[in-house]
Length: 320
Image 1 (cartoon, helix red, strand yellow):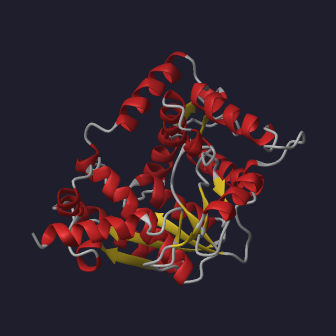
Image 2 (cartoon, rainbow, N blue to C red; image 1 turned 135 degrees about the horizontal axis):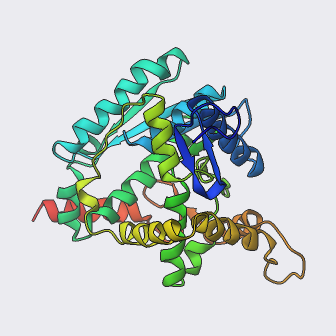
């Protein structure tokens, strides 16, 4: 199998593109896909300060690497969840990348330790408030990533969600007809109100396999193990279902997710016969429903945001 572009021996085949690439041409392909995502969704510009949410895994570290290679100003934030064994390993991977590749680009790694600020590790917090660990984790990460981006004046927050992540999330939302979540399935969410950072997903055009190949070929040292808290997650089931479909019909994930984005972009805004971009109507909806949390001032639809409610419950549970 030879490279589609230069005809030397290929190192990876991409059935959904009916193509194969050598290392150099594959890297070029990956950077081109991310560039197309950034420009097509107007994610950020050359002068914007970007905060990358890193976990020590392949996707987030690959994203940080790609953005730096493309010449963007990108720092990163790692949230240490205090998971015995796993958090230590994943933090080491993020720190090693920061000490190597990122340092040459004058990029820095910020670290937030859950045990220090929230008072306990993620498993203990979940037990205190009687909520699933993944749900607790998601609430903390969303809050702390947004808080860091806003307080330290970053223009945009970037996450390493790839095509597989977005397609499986879409499948779950469609199966349960969660319209509120479907509205926010896009790869670029605007900073609709003060206190919210703009959020983008520059890897949405790349599959998980493609990101993994990029990481291996470019010697990015990442944690391979799945988070032990994710065992039994429905998202893993949805990914498995889509992987089976992709094997039988290459391009299924791309057609599913990108087809959804195209229809979403053409959907008329409520009360108007004219097509409007989804982010515009979403921003209007946020401005109408969001206001500052009475405790921390971050935007919320209720008087107290989910994070502050959760921390209050955890504090009450720990004193019993």
